[in-house]
Length: 434
Image (tube, rainbow, N blue to C red):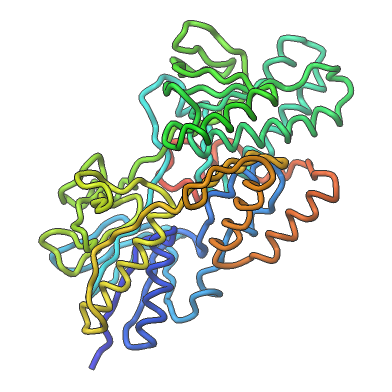
């Protein structure tokens, strides 16, 4: 008798943990297949530390073949799903098509950069959703300070030393807080720049930093940013972006060569192609993570509109914490559909949040207890190490070395701007121009 085939689309938090849980439950009784553009699970929360030279990119890239040996990995970008025929189609990195049938399907395609219809943003901004973007930003920030040092034009020097972050959520706040420390290191190594520090700005239409979190965490992050000299402008965003700078909604113009887009995310465009019911672009599922009308199809993570049973009438937020647990629950419910255990609804209370602000600063509220400074930093790093499914020793070693040795700042020069466009549907991959 042929083994049932379970296909998992995506290897982010939801997909990776669904595959890991199923591989432990199935024990060879099912064929488990993950279709993903890369061969690794990317621990996205630590991307700001890659972008600022604190961590090497492989530290947060956990190999799927190495950690999930019982799972078949297909390198490919899913470009079609035939729900009637129960078939997934993909295109591999060499543009060759492929397809596979399934008995159970887990849609965990995740999310991509949210691109707003603002003139010039797609051409001149860069996000922070994948390793290529983080590596590009590290080189870009280094290059701008070096080019500022090379010029005698005060206007050009000021523009190249100005960095604008749009979005004061998790990613934007951490990027600005850690980015200013990185450019201060660069500035100290270029005495021709004088005493004028690189300038950082954070823009957001919201009324406070980290608007989705407790106000105490928000105040801590805001204070740390301002103490480091970051210009936090709330109720303000970008009206237009050009090669020379950005025009803001308050009418002012900021000369800059660095626009970092951290506005938020949207579900993967694959969801729109399915022809199924969506809410705010997310695929509608029931409390068991099943797609209505398709009992063989499950969806979880950022691509799914999962009912939040702890807050009736609302959806679970698009966070790694929820995606990871939804992936596990989807796996348990798939096992239950084959008679192993019983299915359960997804229900999870937030355990708290951590925001790493660089240096010895952080904000955290584990189990609702607000922490700042070194205690919060300890909790933040401990949480990340526990959440990483691999590379923990290497990651911890990088943190120890950063505390003991000077930060490395050399450009690698491997990713030109066209390779990491903001509007790509797959920010985890480099776009190859032919």
